[in-house]
Length: 169
Image 1 (tube, rainbow, N blue to C red):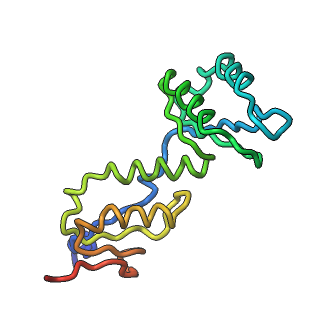
Image 2 (image 1 turned 90 degrees about the vertical axis):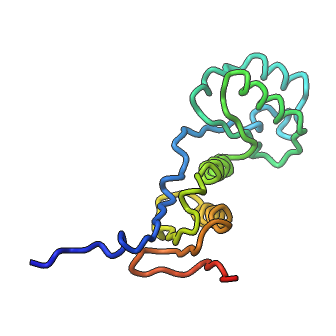
Image 3 (image 1 turned 180 degrees about the horizontal axis):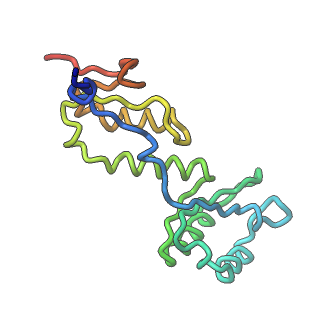
């Protein structure tokens, strides 16, 4: 009887699945459009009243993106006020819509990777991953891992596309 050998496992290849780095947090957004006067401008007095009266506890345990879907000029201090109020309630807030927040969280998860585990590694980034913004995520992963890896490939172990190979000195 012939023993089945997992050649991929013995090869020393390190497989990464981007799905491991996708956000696990619940993401909600605050659209500042709802606070515009006549749909075109933000009045400081009215906006400060919104900041004071809004139920900020509804965002606890979530990650919040703050953006404006209307074509209006929103002063920087408006975003700062919302983020500050979220911070008071222990809520993580970002400026941006849901897609931009997802990217920020993916980037945060990628930069938290312990590079020691990948030192001089031969890395394969799995091709079919269930992650939003795969081109963004894969590019950020390459930027983070390339300085320490021996090689980076894309795809599956049986069919990879070379992305990076460290030059011999």
